Image 1 (tube, rainbow, N blue to C red):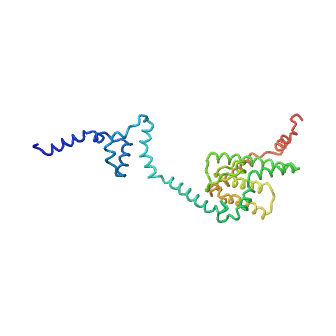
Image 2 (cartoon, rainbow, N blue to C red):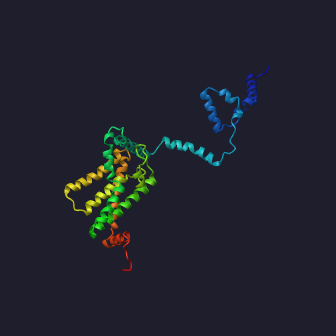
Image 3 (tube, helix red, strand yellow):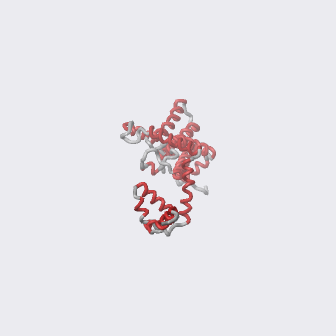
Length: 287
């Protein structure tokens, strides 16, 4: 009989741990095996995992990159659990923007609350479309007989082309989708208005209204109606569920920037006549 019972129990315990079914207890824990054992505890199947240590086989294709990614997990978790004040503010503003935009999208579908007037809102938005204004400017240019009128129309046409290209480039870069899941229509694809940010109709309406207010002599009621038209065109796209409120606001700002740029590089009457001559194939450089 052993003189020291505690030593005997420790010796017996060591012999038990040396058995094949308990060899996994003497090995260092690994990430994948730890997850498996944790899953087994949750499922109430701990004994089956401990009795089969050969179930876990280390992946021979483990690379340094994978180990680095696993080492970064705690840091990423800490950043998610402790976001910065700036991140919280931006996410909160975006959430408010999406919520308000969805509430204003009362004509997003025909089954919406204001679905009965969807066709009228679509017609209002069409008045600010790029194809509408470019085609209308070209028609007015062919009917104009004065150099002053042609000068204004040529610069307006260049401003419209600048607006389309700039908005399309920013939309392609940001790739923000609208508040509602909608595929762009045919006219939107032609005008390269495929994404939400910034609002192309809002940008165009702001630029055109500012351009006409600066270069046309209009009565006060007409000037008020022109400003109101620009605002309603931008708002119509929000009501149709195509844009967010921030898209509309940034579109207005971008349109005013386009107007300022066109005013800075304003083409003179002689330059406009040269462009018209080239366009009508009546330009003679040796005359």
